[in-house]
Image (cartoon, rainbow, N blue to C red; front, side, top):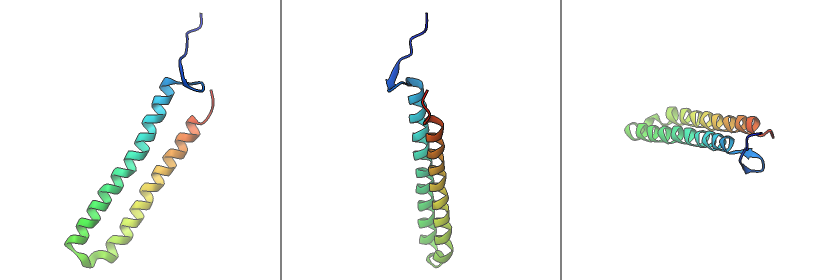
Length: 86
C-alpha cells in the first residue's frame, strides 16, 4: 500500500511549502537587516563628522547595491530550485 501524500497547493507537499516560505523570509529579512544597520551607521557617522559626506555616501551606496544584489540572486536561486514541478 502506497503512503498518502498530503498536498497544500497544486501538488506541492507541505514540507516543500514550508521550506520555500522559510527561505523567502530569510532572503527578505537578511538584506533588510543589512540595509537598516548600514543606514544607521552612515547617519551616525555623518552626524559625528558632516565633512565626511563625500567618503561615506559612495561607500554606503555601493554596500546597499550589494545587499540588494544578494537578495535578488537568492530569490532567483530559490525560484530556480523550487520552480520545477514534481
